Length: 252
Image (cartoon, rainbow, N blue to C red; front, side, top):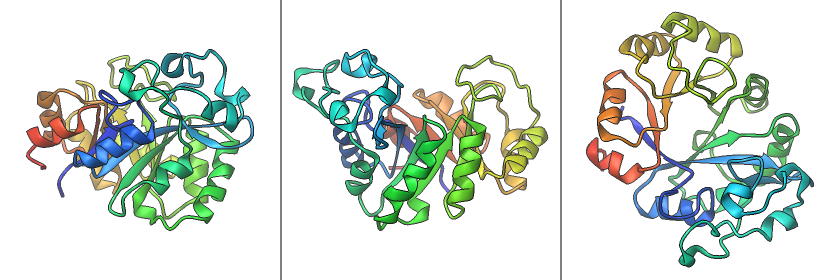
């Protein structure tokens, strides 16, 4: 099976990240799978944004958790991009899913913890999406375990870089391949989504696949690094350059 290329926050090098415009552009450029980040608003709506504060992307310094959906919808997600993206809006999870093509898939990164898992039930209850289209990823161990229990038919991958719920790369392999497989089995998840670092080897891919676990990496924008990830047996590569990486790997 060919490695899956995942468009990180859509076509985020061109369009504003985590917006319908960015995701639509990714689909138009041949993406099969996208990745988006999701937080819970003050009034319980799941919205698409990476940071817990819209300052970096929208120019407003305020916690997302303290804002209602109406206030979030008033933000300009294109303010940091070219003029053509002015007044781009922050979408909800439901809006992202409703604009996803029938063949499309999405990695749903849960940035909030706790109540966001319950909020997912309301979104999924009204949609026609197939379990294989919707994959969950999260750094927080309790969150990814809870969502897997709530939606057992969906894939759920533990996000990590240094074997904790921290995204930062310390560049060291603190868990052996077999230890990583054992940890994932203990968590009850379907695999790992780990930052692509030099310590990852074929032994990790072999150990995870032997345990029927997925081996996924992020964020790979260099074709040479992407080719090395393929050589060590990864199942998917998340990238900001989806079309470029897919072309280099001769996937399109």
